[in-house]
Length: 554
Image 1: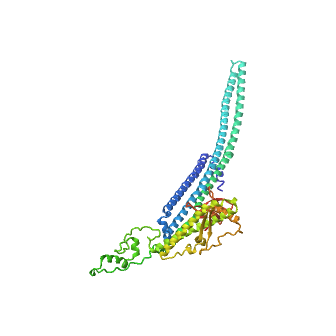
Image 2: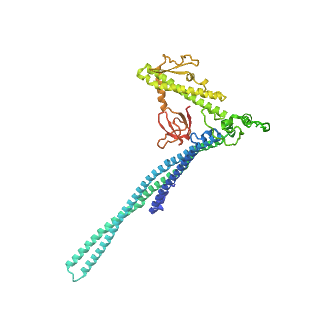
Image 3: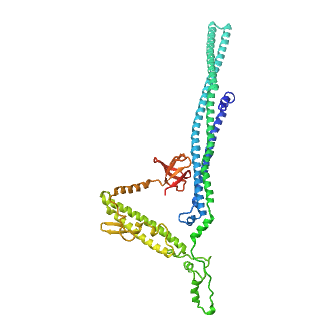
């Protein structure tokens, strides 16, 4: 019923309100422009808000290697970092809201608005042409009417003059005849003007009827349809304004749930235990001081020297640089000790931990060198059996360097193990000497003029055949496999992810995904809220990190 309201009004009530319709349609277009501007300012607010949130999380995130990063072993510190990460994801959702509003509302409606402006201009131009045509016909009618009036008066005057001349006794017959001819000519011209006026009047009435009952109602109907489509499009924009934010609310809710979970994960008891384990020194508490009886003539120097052994524990005083003649004060300001390679400046418990950590690090480095040495030996065997693959002598510098690194690391391993034994605890990690790979402990290097070769020895010093390559093995296949694995590592994904939500991927550089879709992770989130992924067909792009569940390869 509402669709035809203008048509009804156009026939009965507002057929003569062209100016009102003109202003109304123009006002509608201005409202659309105003709404687009409003949404743009809203997106700017969202973007600025997201930017400020990201700067805030970056400001409070600990820098690599700083004291705060070392304290992340405590649950309350780790939970704060989790909150910062959740807020970073939350900022990403605000950015997504701004992007979707800009794409789906501002750009889309602005494009539609331009089309409406062109359509309105066309309809108004048609109305103006129809009006000009009717006005032109009316001018012709008015001109023919005035001519008819003028000629009729002239004919009437000519008729009166002819009659007067005919009654005049002094007038000649020629004068009378001439006056009558003049009157007949004027009468004929007046009749022609009359007929022309009648024709113009009929033409004008017909065009006027066409203008008011056909042309203008049709133009008004077109303007009505245009305005109603504008209203529908604007209404859709209103709905999108809400839906755009509602679609990301589940993810925002997960971010807030993550903040709540970070709060519930705080365990004050475990934090206290972690603090104790990290900083306990292993020293015994100081004992009672002995009474020094000066009445018995005890030597002062002797008393001073015995005080350190009898009353005050030796370890902490020596480590902290205290005077042995003075008691150990718990809250006194401690001077900074000199750092030594064997961590002797640390309390016993801390020293054992640092030595064990150093042993683990050296063990890992040694294992890497062993693996590299084995790879070089395999490559050298391939070169020796197939000269086209390469020159075996070209690998000698690398083999020699690897051997030197292994010997150096074994020396450091022995040194730190002796210090750990001295500290009162043998290393018990997987990288201790008794658990390191046999070839990492028994590899020996021998050099000759043609290059350098490595022969494995057993722990008891006898030659072992385990390291000798089997001639029956496909050496060329091993060589190819090594290089294929190295090539694949350059492009291999680092994990997989499963989409928890749909993502349209409308902006440049992004990729679409459907809920439940499994993608390969190519590049981790760098802190900007986006992860680079790849499909099975090779297509790559970025997706919001909070939209997926990521499982990285170990």
